[in-house]
Length: 123
Length: 387
Ligand SMILES: Cc1ncc(COP(=O)(O)O)c(C=O)c1O
Ligand code: FES
Image 1 (cartoon, rainbow over the protein chains, first blue to last red):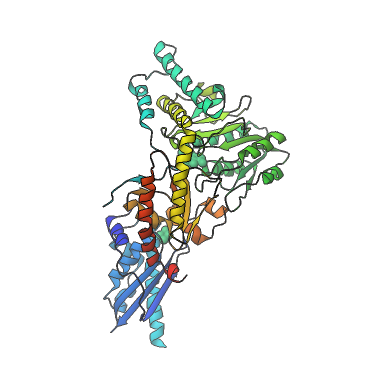
Image 2: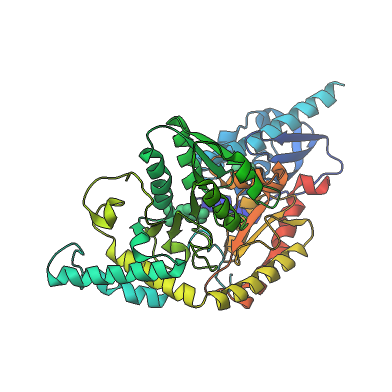
């Protein structure tokens, strides 16, 4: 059902954990199945220097979270803002249709983290 | 890499036992006659089919004339429920439970669309139906009560004996979906006062796509299909001969060793439940005692069932889950909702169903692999860290 890439990320997820000195935290919950994700980012010179995640969800949700952190790490805020769930799914070699919303979880958590970062900058 | 393959999904289906397979083999290419043919070649097959009918009847305390072969549990349930409903001159009332298999629930929803009224009885937190609630639900025009003998997800056994007695007392037909029980636990249609009983061969080490409906002598239905006069016109169409032969043999074997197998599997079950519970934050779903011999359904808190299944799968352990993420509909199973599990607990549910061939070593293997799997997924879970 899942691509090899999904299984690989599920088995060896990158960037799992928390960042104690995070500059912003993003959080989402899926209304579809009740899963949640938490994303921590550390920003330096407008670049996402470090990123970590925690996810409570299915295999696709865990793989999407891991994939997303890999895609985002080292990117500028501008670049990161452009990443959507389809990009994450594509990078994973596709997801079953029923599981596309799991990549939403990851993409939404990123957007939430970036929005929280902006708010913090403005204040 | 994985060192073993451990199949613990016998609630979904079971392997055909070698002796059953051998017994079926001649009926594909050698003894291929049509049992309805008048020639000797057909008569020989007819004899074998009737032999299988006798074995099936004997296994549940029925008469051979009361056994109708069908395409499985789903079809048996459909024939019993739709068949009795169609026999009626006008719509009436049906009593069932909220935790039936979809092959009963969805038929009941159809019956509602056709003008019948259906009471879906609730269950307690262990998944048990209260016989008193059945009694209270009976109305003037209640024509059938359909309650499963045991639930396929959480393994809870229902008080079908009491329910059958109530049905008899009030003159209402009683159907039980016994797909999970036949071949696993002793069951007699007379003690439970059943008018209809559904069974399916692939749950007791027989082939898939073959089952039977017990229909008590004198009970009447309107058949769903029209065609030839096979199976007393209850289920017309040329018989699935190898399937029927396999069903009869598998049931004969299963019943002959039922008590031995029951205690062996129950011991494995309890060992698995105990070992998994020791991981902490693991809850047993279903009834602690009134439970199918092979059913272990637990919720691992703070993690999600599909990711648990995938992890076990990678270790060569095959189980199933009722979590929303693994359902296809993204809804937690109706059974887990009916026993009142909160969303998070339903989310972490995993069913291990033990059966033929499972050994103590299999259980030990699962118990060896479970802790790192659960620990790894919990370490990734925000709800675990926030607990
Ligand atoms: C309780 C119950 N009823 C009915 C069925 C359907 O049986 P079959 O697969 O033979 O159609 C099953 C099997 O999944 C079951 O567990
Ligand atoms: S997180 Fe629930 S289906 Fe993927």
